[in-house]
Length: 219
Image (cartoon, rainbow, N blue to C red; front, side, top):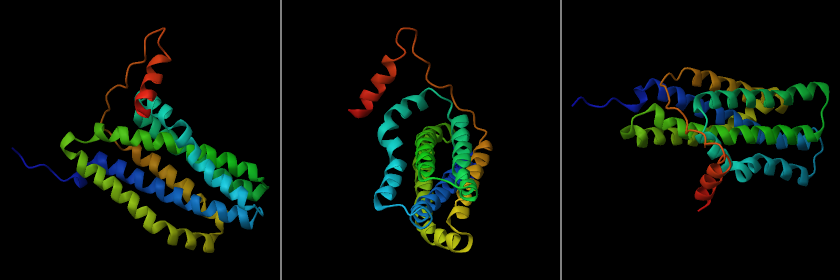
């Protein structure tokens, strides 16, 4: 048999790898810059900054299982691209609001929305990966994606400090919006077709099947 080529020569995997590396890189910029904005520009209290941090994770904790059932019934490629564009638009509202005047509740809404779309993105890219690479390449592919995420956690703190110092925090967040757009563009380049999503339940059982999947996820 012919030797298998490296996963790093797999074009579609590299597109997905780049999208999952660039997106979290920008996310961490916003995650670190938002408390700075809240405290220095909006005189937010410790309670306000705690709420900001909580809202970022609330969609995953509250809707993670339901989102997984939805992802199973949706084509992952358009969902990933849509989440990238939606997050870019939401995050871009922060520097716009900075120039026109804003309220703390706007930050709450933006953090909640980006957390919601990030929940769907994180679930969808994990479901998309097995449709891009062969089964024998899954371990190497998952290791590569984990490497990208670890790298962003190492790079981000120093990068964020530099961006805030040079451009100010609201403008630095624009780099997050650009990273989400770059992520969506990279995903457009993945050409491997994906199988059709799970068929919707027949009439009369629309709610039972998703509930069964959610129960199985809890158990």
